[in-house]
Length: 230
Image 1 (tube, one colour):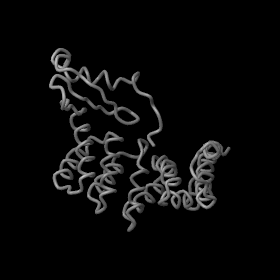
Image 2 (cartoon, rainbow, N blue to C red):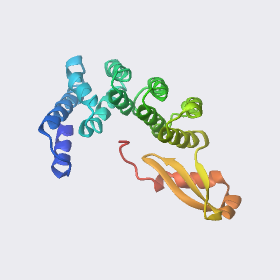
Image 3 (tube, helix red, strand yellow):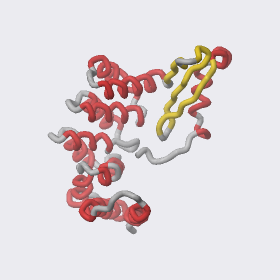
Image 4 (spheres, rainbow, N blue to C red):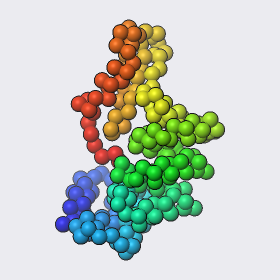
């Protein structure tokens, strides 16, 4: 039925992104293969090949879109998981980075856990940063010990900041920090389905209501706008 192709054709028509015939060819080869897999409920190496090729690409048009297709296939397909696992040990760091983007809520938890643990130990700071970010996005609480260990030895400033941020959210459920200019107020950050949500709380409110009640209110589904993870 080519539902995915139709959606992306409309998106590209309205996009301000500079068009590239070569990249669009790779994108739609992956999309057409994905639509066939969905429509005919079959998956083989030939159908998977254009999806994996595009998912491994370093151009944003491809790596920001195609890994989600491969990720959805990991839910049921060992062949798809094997492809992502090969990506995760590729010699090119951008391919290892893209492998992390293929991990989704549908992916088997043990597979996700193993690849994120591997990503946190990667020699590329960009890959380590994305592994920490994805641990938070997917709410993989089992990674708290790994995040603690990675944070303790991390030297790259940006990566260390991401590790600390995701560690605190996963371990504690929130980040509470005092306002530098006002001792009676605190900033609070919590995780929501499509990212994070922040706010301000007074010392008196903390004392009266307690941190857990405030966190629960901030994370209530009715306050969140659900969307695709990426």
